Amino acid sequence: MQTIDLKRFMFEQNIKQRELVEYLGVSKGYISLVISGQRQLSNENLSKLINNPFGWDTSILLGASKENVSENQPQNPTEEKPEEKGMVDKLLFLVESQRKDIETLIQIVKNKDERIEELLDELDTRKRGCATNAVSYSDADAV
Image 1 (tube, rainbow, N blue to C red):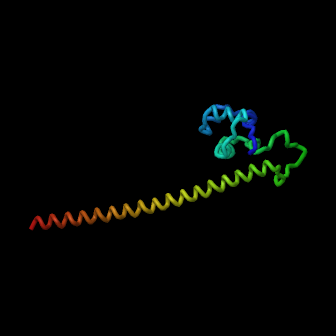
Image 2: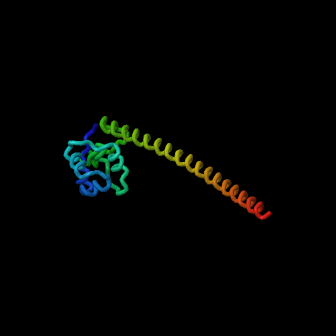
Image 3: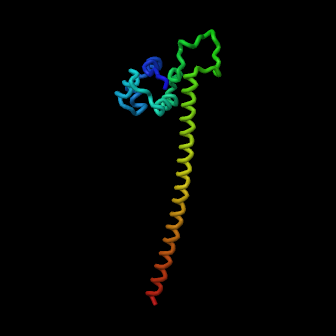
């Protein structure tokens, strides 16, 4: 697995360790270990960083660096380093896996919604049946 330069990412994006801890929902110790290279950033946390709502430039997390990009040299997006391709493949796999999980959860919710509607209909039917029986008994008592 490729080492991620989280310290450099935080420096370049002017992100404080506290902000990263809060956003990722992890401990300060975990972030410290990742920064020092003693731990790897999990795929879940890497995905959170890449899909962040703050506009952070996460290209460094994927192996790109500002020093490697020359202003005079046109970038070829189809030209990937092997380690970048590996990371991209992992991220694509992760995204596809999450998409399938989301579709499954959506189907579960739809099925539960349908079952709730069935139970509500059944409850209404039983309430009407009880009301009809109550009227029948009261009519019989009156005789």
